[in-house]
Length: 299
Image (spheres, one colour):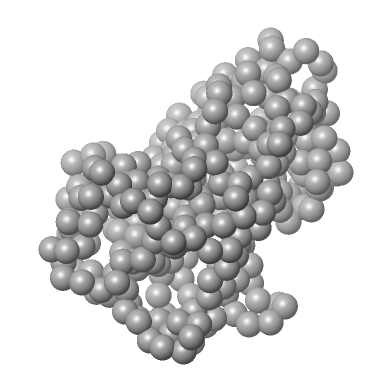
């Protein structure tokens, strides 16, 4: 369902040190909106100055209870911070959008329907699902949101190695192959009590990730109240490589979906949320949930 919305203020958040030319794109968007918007709106640029700053800026921008649009000029990781800041603010009139300006832009590439400037001018707001990950038990368990995917195993391990190296297709390929050669599987205790070993376990709100891989045949727009559970049980490295090749060419085909999924870690393991790598301790309950229609967005 789409509704038309005008914005009292538009806040454009960007990383001034971005490798994706975010400062120039942010300024271009501000100039474009100044020419296109059919109403008066306070359009401001908000540069970040440290990791996590976008969460604070987005939360502050959305906390006033007004009709506000927060645009992240970034890749998936920067947009994740903006989404989490807006969710923390709890303002139902706040809307999020992303202009791709990073190394990974899976969310915009998958869910974008029209040029961002035109979408903002038209004000066609729609609601999409989010993923929520809780680490720990009880009501005080730490929680954060993901707009696209949450991955355990090979996905975050490769991301760590890529982050250490330089960007660029050839260097990325060498980094992936180096990490793959050293990778070891991880083991979890599933909700039924049994143990199981995986090479990778991905909870996907969108059907494509990592620029090239098609994870499932799900609809492009994440608005069905479920996510895909993409499992790679432990196999030989040749089998893993063949599966990755299929994902990059033909796609993995139909994947099971769920509205919630939980397991317990047996050892400390890294995980990846929209491209950002985090870690969790051993013996921690992990709960993944779909939060239907949680995010108001456009573009």
